[in-house]
Image (cartoon, rainbow, N blue to C red):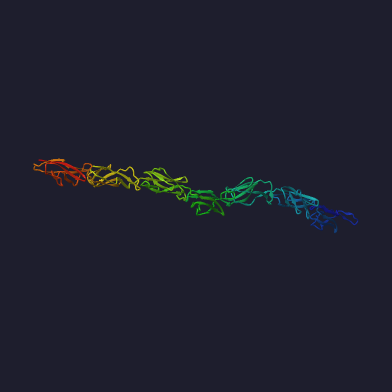
Length: 593
């Protein structure tokens, strides 16, 4: 059999064997037919024409037989690696850190797999991707490398691309809370590939929703709190977004009470305070309920709506509290004079010299009394009334005046009238006596108030009673005597009267005898003559009721009785004398024959 030995280095390869029949001398015997066999057909079977085909690595004895005589040759199958094929031939990793398993197949010259090969693996750029001894490649950085598997001096390659495809965006911090409006929170974002590896060099677009809770700078990712609530912060790059939750929950750090200070000018006045809770950035915290209190409730009270009431002079702190935080304002109650009340508000004095005590009270705007005030008093018409520093008013003259009390630049007034009321009338003279009828007496009257001060300008009505003693001019007070007696002279004004006593008592100032002369004749039958006498007062008015004493100064010539009846006795001249009250008069009585 020729060849005696043959080696096939690839499966599927064939080797033609030939056989020659030889005689004993070694000469070829032509034309015999041979039967071919392989003792290891799994490695190298042989067909009827002696063509051996390599099926597997190993060895086989190829035998050719003719006429019972065999010859053999040895056929070895030993694959020689001619190439290496990697699978996959190319791969792309979407993320750094992702693995890619490569497998390598050694091939013989006929492209059949050479089993049992150990491969040495390598990466053309270990910075981009590494590969271990099992062909497991790992992407380390974006880029492209060649993965090589080598065995038996043959190599095969595959291409590995590390692309780092964006699959997620991670926003930091994942959650954040701002406790004051206006505060800012800086967010950062990282783009990652499927392996969670950071993708460098990405820029992000920032947004916040819903609107109104926070704004965010679309470039820098700095968020600013606007209102309490929860906002979703979103960073987007390459169509991929990541989110974070931003909670805005204001925490009260201060309470501001307005106004910070207030002054009430009167007790009972009210001051409305308001309180604003503020966060750490000085922004109002809405929806807070405040508890109100006063440091001195006796000076000022405050209700739960912040309405303070001044109760007494002094200062108190008005405090609003919420969420454990307090704020205060100062409330001062100063009781500024708002009005002055003079009492009595009106007064009428009915006599000069009469006094009226006025009092003044200072009050605040609420009408509360302000104690301890001193007042300056003034009369705007001192000729009517004067007022001393203590408010005592003295009537000076009839009329009207306004009395003013002033304190703290605020004045109050009272209206004062002085109108003398006649309480008495004094008639002058108090009493008088007239000694003759027809005589006149001028009476005068003065009206007086209860203080005995003259009430000027009064008109008097005059009368005399009983009538018949004297008459009096009702307007002038001039009395004229009419008869002896006592009469009361009355002067009346304003319903008040005063009196004087007028006595009429005629005093004999002269006596007149009648007739003054008379003649009787002794030869006549009539020897008597009745004389009469009249006593006259100083006004030559008869004084009635007088008793006369009659005497004859010549009683031998004529006599006269007590009634004035003279009787002739002898011729001659008789003087008839009549006397009364120390006054006398004479009549001549001539007696003839």
